[in-house]
Amino acid sequence: MKDNKYAPYVLGPVLLVVWGLVFYKIYQAVYGSEEVFDIPQYNKLPVFEEKQEDSTYVLLVDYKDPFLGKRFYYSSDNNGSAVGSRTKSSRTKSTPPKISKKTPQPIVQNVTSKPFPAIVYQGYQVMDNDTVALLKINNRFYPIARKRDVFQQVHVKEIYKDSIRLQFGQQEQTFMKKR
Image (cartoon, rainbow, N blue to C red):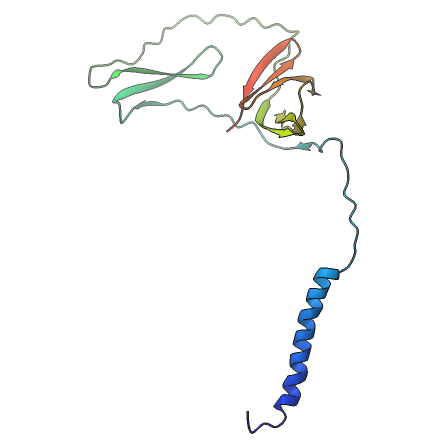
């Protein structure tokens, strides 16, 4: 460096340019362009549709509990939902539950009543001292569902922390929160 007489003359302007760019970036960040963004105002949030197929599965298992030594059987009840039952300890001789073979009874359905649509209760939120629910009806998402609101002919009756009570036609049903 001692041998080069021109180094201060070259490095001085380079140093000024670098510090000038640093201060220019800081100035731009603080006093930058004054673009005004118009934020759209909504009375209700937009509704989003999801293209999803219903993916409900029921596990049909017959296994021995490794800790208690008991067998666990699943069978379905009249509504088609799984019901579990335990038998005696496997150390004592146990037999699987006997399934009675009854003749199927014809199911009489009232043609005038429609079945409940596919509903998923995803939770709730407290906004402005009002409780709103996050609700999905027939794969259509409703982020703000208040008590006494109607979506696709489904009336919101009550909103609880872990469930929601809805009415569809003359039917009233409670749906648990999806985990």
